[in-house]
Length: 218
Image (tube, rainbow, N blue to C red; front, side):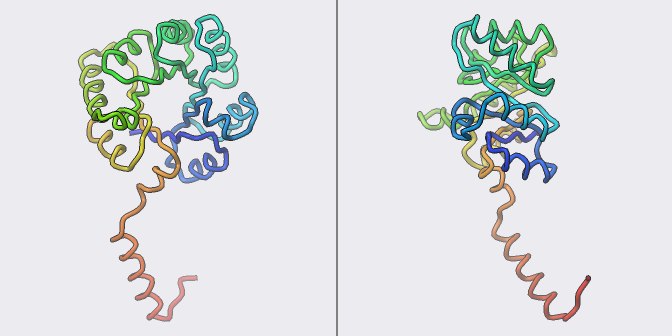
């Protein structure tokens, strides 16, 4: 499974990239606004930091403007995945851009039916939002299972399932068990993957026992 971080904080991105655990980045208009940075400049800087795909979202909703924005965003770097909404106009933009070799991330997916449309339109990634489905009483991980099962039936579907709206480490673990290709999560959730009380307890014991030896490796 590939790990993307869902942030526009360049400091967080650099830190995760240094760990070797980061495969890509996803951003959205809300995250860009929170950063206070110029959109194009920030996306370019992120592309310089990470080796994998960097999702950058269009800001309009009509086909012509979305396509123009997508073409401009795609020029930033070959690593850019233009992010478009799962709407009729968004899928038309997806088809146009993907036909030219541009990576496209179709976002705001909430059903297997929508995911089929994204794959048919040539999306590189489809982003089902599991946390938002959980919020309204639906089982978010259920859609991941359904989409992975459907995609596996058709060799010509090349779209990767990018699990989004991740709220906890268990979302990541369950997505991996199902076989999702990618998960994108906030930095705080990715860092929670390290945590286990027995790891902390064991490390504390090792440190205590080592001090008793009075030795130093250096």
